[in-house]
Length: 120
Image (cartoon, rainbow, N blue to C red; front, side, top):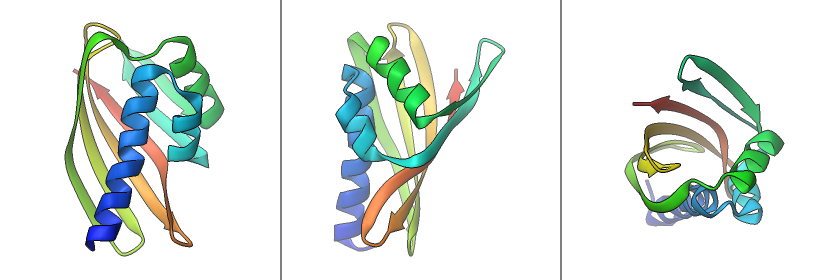
């Protein structure tokens, strides 16, 4: 992985981290591909959300209620695709998540195309 790709993938994932924490629609919009989707379960409820739905949720309920800690655990890249793992503690106050992000480089621009999450 080149330093340039690593830095840009990290920047895009950090746009998600900060955008979700603050409820910043512009940051989330920049991070995610227009066709991106989110998948996972929270308390036995299945979630399959598109980009507009996710941004709406984060704007209405930002993740940081005062003590959120988010950390990029790993980044792996092969050519034009990458995977990033993020761990969140104190999301929405008391929730702990592990997020798996898939990214694609579209003509020189990295975008998150999907997120799968696990609520601990």
